[in-house]
Length: 250
Ligand code: ADP
Ligand code: MG
Image (cartoon, rainbow, N blue to C red):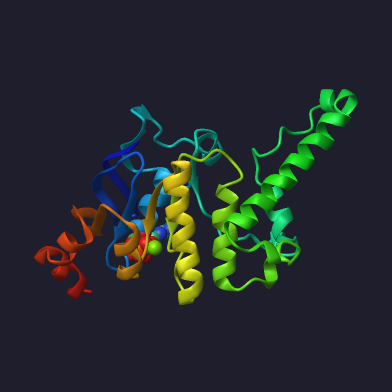
């Protein structure tokens, strides 16, 4: 689904991403690991259109998507999770889900004049969808809770929920499990697995917790110093000497 070809992203003279090439297969849950500063988040930012690359290319289903803005990628079904922005923290979980761009048709003048009924219908269907998502994520009881009052892990679930309000094909998750307790981590893991199996989502996830990665991801890609060092199953990665050295070296 995604092919990254010799991607560079430099900051001044510093090569945060230094010629990374990798592929993400349709239907996979691909893990991305590596020591701190390896360039993982920067790579995500370039793929997801938040940062232009210095050079190199990103392809989605064979089409060059390098440097496309996030909203364009969003329409193609390429999403990344974002932390709940400040302005959304005073809105309920349900409202947060209903606010996802692209999940509503937008109020054109035509709609405003003639489409009142349709808008009400759409709002009802959005509401149903939001409730389905909350149910799927096992946080129905939090639907009227302000997003700002959620625990770190619950916020992560809500972030994942926002990707479910639109027709996503591939979702990039940057440390969705960081700082989350075991129980919620399992809930997040289950949601990712079910989205993959039941709805055909492809995932690429950066994560530090190797158990979490091992349970969900195949293959796992290892990055170090801006490049891809290895790719394989979690067991192959763990027994790869270069990988072990890269981790010990930091
Ligand atoms: P990772 O996610 O693997 O921990 P990052 O992609 O966040 O790594 O960062 C890779 C390197 O690039 C780090 O050394 C970081 O300090 C540097 N870096 C990231 N973003 C910027 C930026 N906007 N300006 C300068 N340096 C940056
Ligand atoms: Mg990072």
